[in-house]
Length: 459
Image (cartoon, rainbow, N blue to C red; front, top):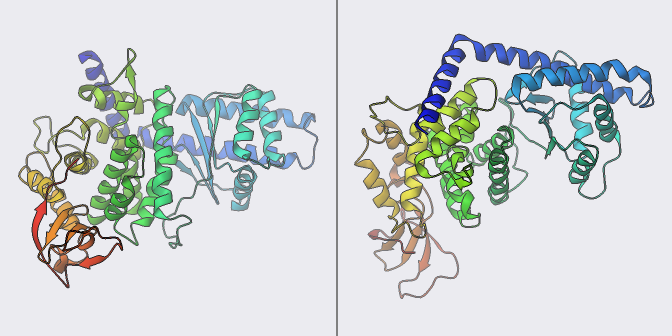
């Protein structure tokens, strides 16, 4: 196992050196060029069906060209993820900037959206005959019920089970105005469990990583956090998630909170969100039939994510976050990467405050902050931890408090402004007479009552 760790470290080090030397830019250039050809040929094939019968010899050359480009991309990337978002197209993590008219690209996306498809993953090269079948399926009227599932079933029946279909994607691009969310936060948060499950399931099945669905989810969380505290919303909906997704999503939300407070751009926040969602991916893998233990989960996760070909900045950040998120700030091995330092804070805070059967008692939220504060400069980046505290406040969301009035409350907000650092908005759970509160009454400690005791949580 030690040799595997050393090999993974050497591979990552080599990859980073090559990335800094410009390999990532070269790969991105090739992906953009091949990706543009890929989309152009697909557009042409779809439009030709409006003029010619599918058995016309005129399809032979463009079908051969499509297969050739697909083969090149598979050699370059492993799995090819083609995603259409309005007038944008992504191939894996690289946005394709087309010289062709944007309405042509939109037409490709529109044809797929009729089947409720937003993206197609090619895990292997398909034959020319299968390419024609795929094109014919795209132009056919969609099934009335579950069109995407029906489409996938037909692919499987025609020997194209290596192709995976994804739902419709919605990215908010830089400079775009923020519109009202199509779904409430709770819907986004609940659906996130299936996104995480699918990503981990694909990796455990030895498929290449596909970060795009995860990035979509991260972008939706970033959008939501503009109108409300992401930590508060996450806490409120955390209990509705399956247990395997709770920790991952809370770490992601807390990481985004720190990154947002630190002034990261939307693009960097998106990368951070993806890295946080993959930080514990090693636990989804098996070695010799057994789940990977804690001691090896970072190495296993690193090895799995390294299978995605190419070394652009987003991937390098993910790899470093997975490899270093348990490394101390003052580690003799060197200071961890920025994303790793952020995720380390979010990860430990959630572990200290989350009840886990058989893992011993948990800490109150204020006590968890106090314990972590004692290790700043050693385990944690002191500046990033201060940013975290400044957002969470003296009584972070979830803190159980007894007030001078005798009421029992739970903190329901982080810091709203400097004056409310120790005065959160709280929800009453017990009245002064000890009776259970039933009307979800809110108390703003900035205007009334005061905290006299922090209560310890129980199982």
